[in-house]
Length: 205
Image (cartoon, rainbow, N blue to C red; front, side, top):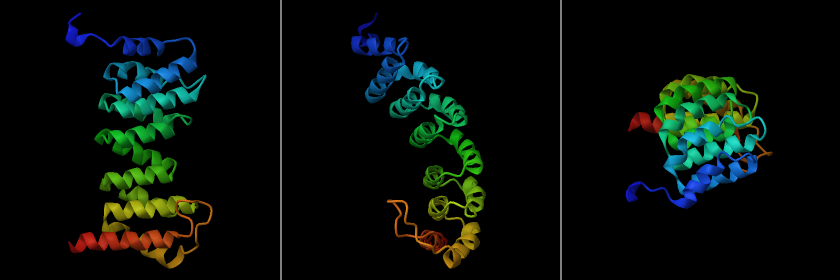
């Protein structure tokens, strides 16, 4: 083998361990390869996304490793993993890091079916206005955490279509959130007011 293409013996051993019969050995190998950002592990890590029958943590660690490696060829497999309840959270985190255009619509669809604050944050950070209508609908969600992070996301998107629902939240959604450390003592109205400011600032810029 050409010296330039020679595989590091340690990497070779880790790649071999991804096929070990002991699922915990596979798990530790996936974590180690992710930390090394080992490109040659991508195909095997994608296969491990399906290893959620006996130990769902392994599939989750494979998703995280793929995000660390940063190879967008993993995006379709990570999108497919959104359908797996025990893996979807880590798949969302991985897709957020990879920030690939192909994941936008699947994440919007996921959020429409299962509104989640973390997905609202991703959609807001990506600033893709295809998410606006779905986020507006989520402002009616019963969970105040969903509404809070959705309001923040709408502010980042800066689309004036969100103004009516945000203005309504400012007027009516004033109960303080007390059961979450990250937003404790704040209300959906607070997030909505900040979002309105952001949208109007963009309009005036």
